[in-house]
Image (cartoon, rainbow, N blue to C red):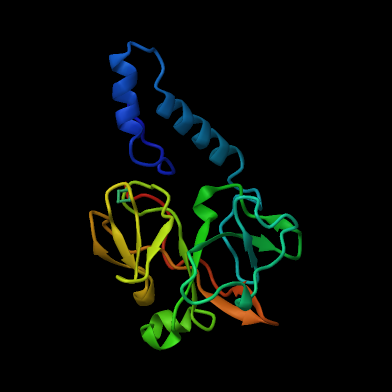
Length: 202
Ligand code: FES
């Protein structure tokens, strides 16, 4: 059984092999993938699953925000750990958490260290990148300030947030998609759509 859902992280194939070895009839990873596929198909047009749009605010992911309070510039300091967030449409009150491909990591960097293109897409040094690795779709959770890289534990791909999410190590075949930001009344606001398709590279 082949696990091929683009949202699923690496290790799905290994899960399938384990399932074969234990003579199970179902591959848990495949089931998860199929469920995820069905969910994506069913809700492809839902506002909660549609990709971030200009004007969206950003709120803490993982239920940490409670009341979907928009994140502000002052919410994040240089040197903080990456902040996971989902887009939030203030006009409809829709949290776009219906797809993990909408999840982003926020990092605040010194604006003088950003290349010109990245600086234009940042909000006073705050940059937003897809949290889904472009290799096989694992969640990216960590930022190493010494190397200035976001990195993926699955196969150790590294992405440089100060330079458009450029791949600087590991097997990832393409840059990490960036979500352009701007400031409005001190709040972090989505300025445009992702610079490229978020998710694993098939
Ligand atoms: S999934 Fe392979 S490096 Fe991230």
